[in-house]
Amino acid sequence: MRHDTSPTARALLALEAIQDSPGISAQRLGELLGVTERAARRYVAILREADLPIDSATGPSGGYRVGRGLRLPPLMFSAAEALGLVMAVLEGHRDAADPTELVGAALSKILRVLPQPVAEPLRAVRREPGPAPEESRPVDAAITGRLVEACTRARRVHLTYSLGPDTERPMEVDPWAVVLRHGRWYLLGFSHTRQAVRALRVDRIVSVFTTSQTFTPPADLDALRALEEHLSQGWRHPVEVLFRASFDDTARWVPRSLGRLEAAEGGVLLRATTDNPEWYARQLAVTPLDFEVQGSQALVDAVTELGARLSRSARVPRPAPRAPEARTGYDPDAAEDESEAPRTRVISTGPGSPRSRSRGAVT
Image 1: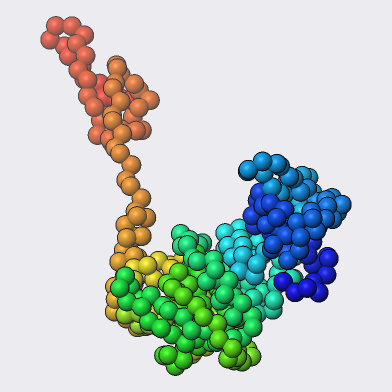
Image 2 (image 1 turned 120 degrees about the vertical axis):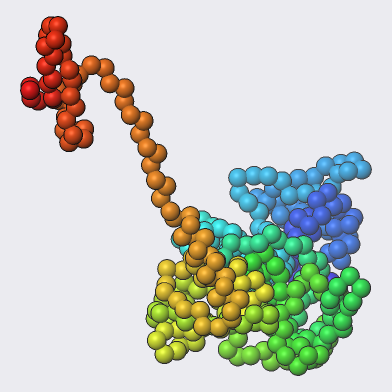
């Protein structure tokens, strides 16, 4: 730590150290701040004078920790921690995009203090929230932090990327942005190894070394859009779908993760690739727009099968036939519900003189 660090800065660093290491001793705190143990205690006293709940305990397991109270103390986040927190909430909370809601207001405060290269992908996610997140995958916090710092400083990195259990590849990359999307962390940037834009999964990055070589990121970079388009390309089955709608309506209903939209005659053309036509057909079906699959026989078959299955599910079952009611005696009012053929009863009025009477008439 620099010797000319101001007392205020040291007090904030002391707060960060206590938050990161609950139970930290005064001696260890002084070592981290570059001051004596006695001076470290003075910085703790400064925090307490600011009404921050700093608790202390004696003994082998004692030390300083942030206590609980009605007023929250300032929370110190690294850029990577703030990035993960904001993007996870944006993907999982329905009110996160609304700055007038409690969650949205809290996220706005974090966005205002993050570096611009880190904050801009977050604002893009906030404007256009995507589908529900998949199951999250753990990443190395130290590696993520180094990647975010390299993006912020526009420094080229050398990294080792895992392609499988026994296969690793060294890569030289200009890191543009770290983006959390659909439950996975990605590094978006230009790979000098492949001479192409790449979206690398952060959980597969084994090591990172930040060089002193700088680069200039694209001036009009939309990190979220670039990532979504990249993820929609390079699969086995080509996709061409024509939506019979305006460009704005199509863009509102079709997630960018499905592919690239282009203005076309008669509507908007969606171009992409997929390894799972059945999944892709289900994504198309949830839109309220009319569309026509123009490419990929596999997708045509998947849409046809999905339509047949939905048609089978929509069949209304026939009502079960009602059991005939048992009759007791003669009911002269039941004629209108019966067959037009008259029923005949024979009534004996005496020996050898039968009379027949049909319903409603006597003969």
